[in-house]
Structures are given as structure tokens and as C-alpha cells.
Length: 408
Image (cartoon, rainbow, N blue to C red):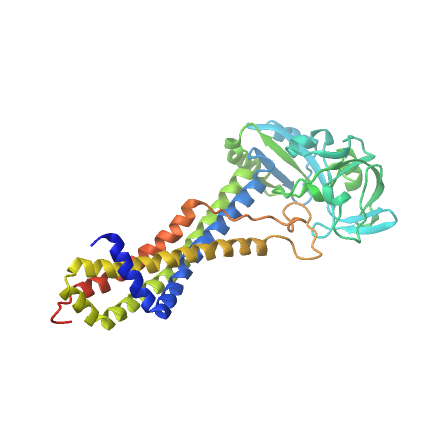
């Protein structure tokens, strides 16, 4: 017999038992659906996280001051001399206090509003590659400020927008220091970066930050490296030299850790999917055995009419392959839809949630997770379903092929 005839006979047999066929197909759909949905979502999550990590560039290390450690210009100079360090950008972070503008006041909060980051404004484009000015110009002066996208285009109606030439006042917690600023520039939307969200920042000069913080000790520093490969050694040197007085974070190390964690999740999800495939395997085998038992007379008849042993076996195997193929296609399509559904669930912050800085809270526009759907993933989902179904049908098909016409 030709392969097409095996398929025709198998398809006819499946159509004669529609309900059982549909239920068997549904049993195998779960496996490829899980494989496709979970792998596509985790791959998309990996891409999103890694892209956010690499916004600053992989040649960056962040150092944060701990406690009352005096992180002054001398420390900055010492760090600059470490082998592998290209440039050091100290900063002040003002994360608590109050902002007043247009007759309204609101609290600075890393999770609900904005924070003030004092850096050397002349180097803003070095810290945030591809950052763009929407209007105005960046002026490195203690009386001027540069506002991120969400500061001049807030989603919260209770927070007034801050435009170019607008005046606003920043008061630190307890009223310890108060400074007024004129907005010199508005920035385009940038998006969430690793340690902070530039869209939610109000950038001022280092001198203004020193006056607001009322101290010469910086909050920390961004360190640009000569090359990404030296990041681990620089972090080790910093920790050996300054101990528990600082925390150092390497973009490269964090990216590797994230990939390891997601790799572990993939193994876990694959195990879950394997369990569903095992259930499908047993269900298909049971269904095929039942079908063989019910069709003993039919098997004997076709053998008496000239069917060979291999013809019977291949016909039953064709049934298993068709079940697996249909189940794989439906399951993979379901998995793709589920992956996009999961991405919508994970995208977007809760209502009234406003992010802040240094990895606290989600970004205001939501971290967009786009599932990674590629031909390899689709082929894997369908192939696994066909393979499981074929293996499940081997023993029943072999048993059916061994019946003799007289015995049947």
C-alpha cells in the first residue's frame, strides 16, 4: 500500500469515532500548549530584562554608599585609579521630600511620584546612551533642572505637568533644605533602565544635589569601564577596598544571574509540560488499545482480503500520527495565544502605581514583554506531540498487526 492509502484508511477510522478522537486530541493539546506558551513567555521575559539591563551598556558598574560612609571626591578619585575603570560619575539621590509647582505639592516617593537625581548634566548622554531632548536645552547650572518624560507628561491628574521655563521647588524631608529650579529641558521617553527609570527623574546639577542633601558625601557613583570583561574584577576590587561601606552591582553579572534563574524556570516548566505529555501518552495508548479491541473483526476481514501485517500496523500508526499532528497544531496555536495573553497580564503596572528609581517598582508605562515566537518553537511543539502520539500508538498497532484472520 502507498502511504496516502494508510492516511486515508486511518482518517476514515478516526471519523467513524469522532467523539473519542476529539477527546483524545484534546488530551494531547495541553502538552504542546504548555511548551509553546511557557517557552515563548520566558524567552520574551529574558529579552526584556536583558535589554533593560543593557540600556546603560554592559560596561557599567553602579556603586551605592551604605550608612554614614564618607563617599567624597577622594573616594571618587581612588575609584578612578582602579585598573579597568574608564570614568566615574558621582551622583546624589534625593528620594524623599516634597515638590511644589503650580500651586500644588506632592511627596517624592520612589514608588509613587518622582525623585531628584543630581549628576554632572554635561555627561547625561554618557550615562544614558541615546537619551534625547524633546524641547529646551540642558544647562549644567545649580538653578536649572532637566525633567524626564513622565514629569512633564504625567498620567496622574493630581500631579501637575512641568514645562520648559516652569519653576518648581524641592524640599527635602523635614524641610532640611529647599531649592527652587527652572526647567531648562524636557526629555523624550526613554524607558526603564536597570537601576532607575530616567522618565521619572528630575535631573539637577551636582552642586544643587550637594545643597539639597546638605552634605559633600555622594549617594554613590556610576562607573564606566574600559571593557565589559573587567566588570567582575572591578567589583571584587571595590568590595575588597571598601568592604560593607558600599554596594557594587555589575550589569554583566546581573545579566548572567537573570539568565541562570530563567534557565532554571525553563527546566521547571519543561518538567510540568512533560507530566502533561505523559498523561497524554497513557490516554492515547489506552484509546488505541480500546480501538484495536473493538476492531478485531475488521482487522481479520481486511487481512483476509489481502492486507499484510505491516499494512495493518502502519494504518494504526497513521491514526496515532494524525491525532498527534492535529493535537500538536491546535496545542501550539493555543500556546501562542496563551503566551500573548500572559504577556498582557505581566505588562503594565497596577493602577495608581508610579515607579521610582534604582529598581524600585515597575515603570509607569509597564515593562512590555513580547513573546518570542519562532519556527523552531512551533516545530518543537508539533514534533513533540507527534512523537508522543506515535510512541503511544506503537504497541497497540503492533498488537493489531499480529492478529490472524482466523483468530480475529
